[in-house]
Image (cartoon, rainbow, N blue to C red; front, side):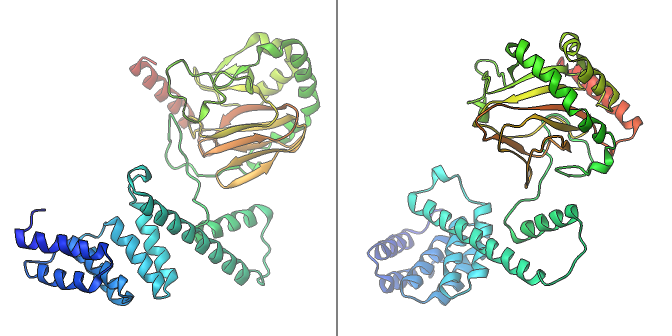
Length: 387
């Protein structure tokens, strides 16, 4: 913005007065400059001068004037949060800081002092969220409830989301985000009555896996295999690495006959289960091996029209799995079904290899007609794009 020459001179001198921490002189110069018309920058400088004088209420009032001119001014919001803290309105400051950080510029473009303010604001927001969560938990504790385990877990997650400690899980599929499907990290077992049959077969599957590990472990290939030059993002450590490897029984809808022939009972069991069936896309079924002290970083799957099933087969020690806000430990003989379009990650913290069976099943909230149409839709898209 271009100002009249005299106003420009007065504003520059006011800035120099603030730099030498002379707020009285700065205010006199700003009063003169305002005779030419109020400006946003001059209003911000007036707020700085009042803050230096210790008049925090007046500074806050002036910052509101600046925000009335530019409601999305990041620095004005940061300053307002600081002034609210000065007058002991910390809870109000938290909300202002939260709004400021939502519109913050990239950290790399901010001077160190502003980055420090951003970090302070973020830490204050976190402390406030933790205090709020504890307050609500204490208030609720005396209430007697009959909540089952699943309902209790959901309520506790809801409380932490409400307090601002966690973000609600969301589906982020890489390929197809089909509408009106629920966002559920781990699905209720009652939707999959065949899980008991799968779990009972654990010893049979383990025996066939043991033979494969002895005779065909070299055929387990790196699960992450980006071509040279492709952006690997979070997969740099695991790209083309046998730290995370797999042996497929089905891959993109195609039965891997040679592998299935060496694990016939496992293959027969999978064929008896309601795996997702999409020509050219699904099912996929594999043994997934994770080496000791290895972390699979956060990622999401391709489509929410199908879910993934995990059955642990080798658990040498601590092994965790997170989907959204929920972290679980694998238990031998206990399978689960989860939505892999919600961000998830895994850790093998043991000193030996962990192996699980993974395969995909249809989302239970789809009817058979939709399944057929979704498959044809995906095939049409692939044909159109030449994929």
